[in-house]
Amino acid sequence: MSDVNSKKLDRIKSNIFSRTVSLAKFSINAGAGLAGQGLNKIFKTDADGAISWNQFIVEQAENFSKEVGELKGSIMKAGQMLSMYGEHFFPPEVNKYFKALQQDSPALKWEAIEPLILKYLGTEKYNQLEIDREPLACASLGQVHRATIKATGEAVVLKVQYPNVDLAIDSDLRAIRTFIHLLKVLPQETMLDPVFDEIKEMLIQESDYEQEAKKTEAFRQRLKDDPRFVVPKIYSEFSNKRILTSSYEKGLRIEDSLIQSLSQERRNQLASHFLDLYFHELFIWKDLQTDPHAGNYKIRISADGKDQWILFDFGATRSYSDDFLNAYHRMIKGALVNDPDMLRNAARDLKFIYDNDEPLLVERFEEFCNETVEPFLKPNDPRQKGPVDADGNYDWKTTDLPQRLSKRVLEIIKNFKWRTPPREILFLDRKTGGVFIILSLLKAKMNGRPLIMKYLESIK
Image 1 (spheres, one colour):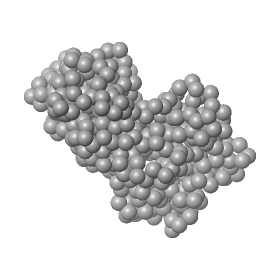
Image 2: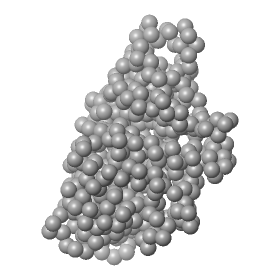
Image 3: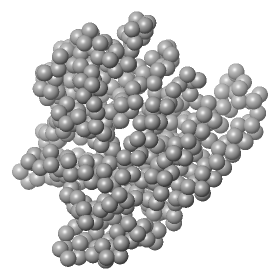
Image 4: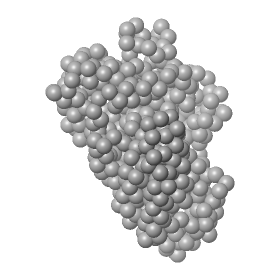
């Protein structure tokens, strides 16, 4: 969930027919724009032709992002999800607008959201609550309002889903595929079916608040005796498939000046706890909250220095099979302990590489994996290129590792035939990248190797 900006919508196009018409009009206009450019302009081989084509796709991507922002729902969420992969195959000019969908998301006005709350809860339950008209946060699928249970005075939050989100998933995904195909911004051999299958599955899950309630309760039970973390309590009497009510948990955003002014030691401790939670999800529970957006976490400062993480939004929690994660764990360990055979065999099991791949591709993939685990290498490891001190404390804020990894991926795509990664990787990559960003926001300087090696000891 993101903070609410000042702009608010009177309504969204929730009717499937009106959404389809709106998106069809966009596609027709984009197609007309393509024809209007003139083939002799767009497909020129000189610099003027390249500039003309780039300007055209930028204009269409900008128009698409504006249209999607007004529609909200699954098309906006799918656009956000695609931006994770977009770094690897979309032109930067296009992916910029997919990324923009994650930013300023306008909320619905109270006059539009109140009837939904009344419909979802029913009159009797609705009258038991005192609901704030101003939303606390909003996103593509719904928005959050603070409320008070009149009988008990308990402070709660209501996550209210926008109408017909689940019904529009198929048509919205088709619209995005049409847009991508229209602009011809991908290599012809690119197979996006696995990516869209994974996105569809996650969208169906995220639009089911009963499922999210179960996942939230599962994490609450796992962490109930761990004082480092707080998971909101679910109020089932005020929750169903379209509305989710949980306890209001007060805390500060990671970017808050009070968090940023904490001592390096306390910020490192918070970072270590967050990393440990990630490893529990990845190695022990095999159940990951795959949307580690900064807005899904808050920090509760304690006078005794035992600060706590408050964890929100378990709608994107994904379980992974033992077969997949066992191979993934071996690939991580192979890179960390510099065991090329373990790394290569695990990568084959995951279908990142194949027996008939040319040696140079395998070498480039291994180099990418070795660089990915850089924050956990020994300080004297010759592969270590990051900002690390003699004690192995890695500077998560100043490193240029994300840029180096993106450059490596682009080089692989440019020089070798594009291969769609395993579908499970889509949201696992989102999780890993999000964890990195959280530690960067905390300006952590810490040695994470002893922590991860505890989880890798039994991996063979």
